[in-house]
Image 1 (cartoon, rainbow, N blue to C red):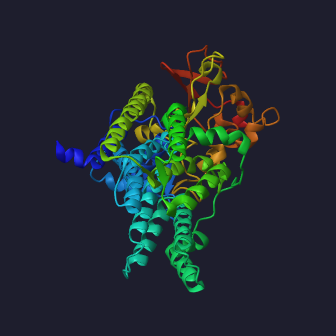
Image 2 (spheres, helix red, strand yellow; image 1 turned 90 degrees about the vertical axis):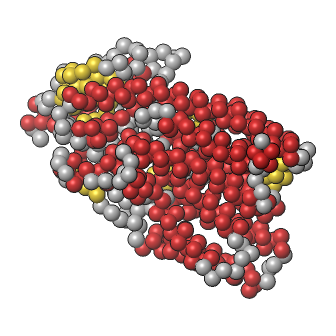
Image 3 (cartoon, rainbow, N blue to C red; image 1 turned 135 degrees about the horizontal axis):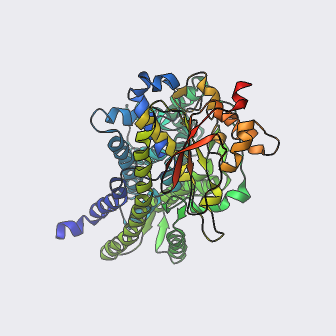
Length: 525
């Protein structure tokens, strides 16, 4: 018992990791909106794309895309584990990195791990995790660990230090580009802080610091400049500060998809402000500049960049994790241990809440996948949302994002073609073969399903009455000529009507499967 008391940081971190990882293993399929598309990608990368019927629709094109963490790791794990177990093991490691990485930063700064590192672990449950942004989430956790090693080895003059970090940053680049940017900000600002602290402003010393950082990031920068594949159309830079400020705060900690833990976020913010005001907390001097710069970047980061959405969701949780990693609680050993024990209670709460949310969706996913058994192999299937049924009351609404990629389970279960599979050129290694690439989403902006009310216009190829058809769903014009099945996701409200060339095949508790018949418009094309 005394050994556990003396080693309470390790014990508490271990318990925290178990609590936050546990929901992954309490369900068959976590209700992350992007999860089914990732699973389908792993399935094809592991070999399914080489055999019919999937080989008709998809191919694997290996390039130096800076977005490959799970595409490299999960198919390798599939040599030992089933598909979804391999994916959940990858995510478990990613969660552990978000918990242990900030703790490693704190140990590198202070020589020990304290209670504040435990508080930082709450940020492991952020929007990147609940959305299912596999690659960035893993890479961000890995960047914490690399930064911790950078701090810990700063005073050590070892010949392999720089080559080791060059390799680490190169691996991080392959995992996800955004994590390299974050790590670069942390390292640059840390080195700037150290130069200010030591008053080492000699030109030679400053050049040496800059050269050291530049060499570490040189291979990744060269890969980005010279080998990054050309992306597909639609890449843009958009900020939308006014519309996204709430999303930035809400993304920091979530206990389920689209369920921000506002109470926990607010409580932590108040405790930090009070602790700093009353000098019960202090930020490490070398980390004040990195924290300030991260805070500014969190507020000004764009919503869209390099063809990808959700850039504004990347940094809030990183800021939270780094902030708590850099703070020290000024209290006695027993008080620190008691605070650590108290912090486990919110962890139990958010872990339980996430498990309950995922289980409700898991039952629906299982029902849908059971219904897929009656679907012919090689089916061309697309998803439709019945928004009026999902949101049948002003006081009741169902988030539809967890259903956006549900049809991608049909790729695994029935060798199907779906238009929302992750296959954007320049961003993914799964590619859609011609002529089917003309019936698939080409950009992240096109990555959501249409509403049932848009089917008539889509079938007629009309774009005048609905700008979304031209901008978001152009690949679905005359869909009845290219697809042979549709899944319509509904809620508890009255189901909306569908075009008469859709024939009901199966009705489930929250969806309907329809056979799609070509109509006269197809004969004229």
